[in-house]
Image (cartoon, rainbow, N blue to C red; front, side, top):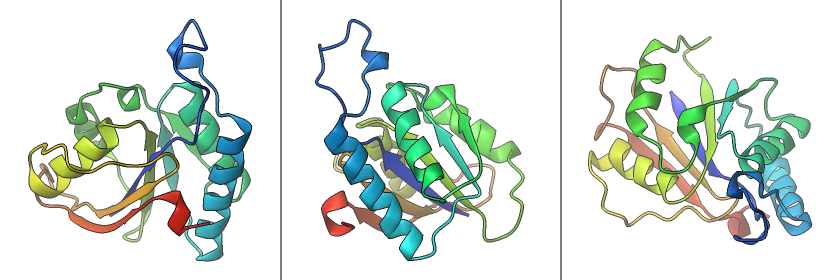
Length: 164
């Protein structure tokens, strides 16, 4: 299955909100995220499902992707919040029945988690070498097996500047 890890767009600066979970995308972040989404639509990419972190900036990113026509379905997934454990997603993934063999799943979350999850899925360990830029995308072929850690294939790692 193709799994796309997408970092939220540019958000308000840390410390500008009492509760960091409530930091929204800023105008520049909304514009860049929409440009990335439009580029993905132009190459006919469509997600069967987008799972998003519950934090507002990630959810707003997922909504922009939905408004551009990249998905019909968004679900909040608590384990995509910062400092989350990939094992909760792996448990969900093992029970997820894809609608077809060409299923495309997007996960909208945060750095360093998305970089770490990429490393776990590709290498089986965290090396702290992959950085996902804001509105950047990682594309992985994740096998539908019990434990895909270290068995996934990286086919895309791009920052938004290469998409817009």
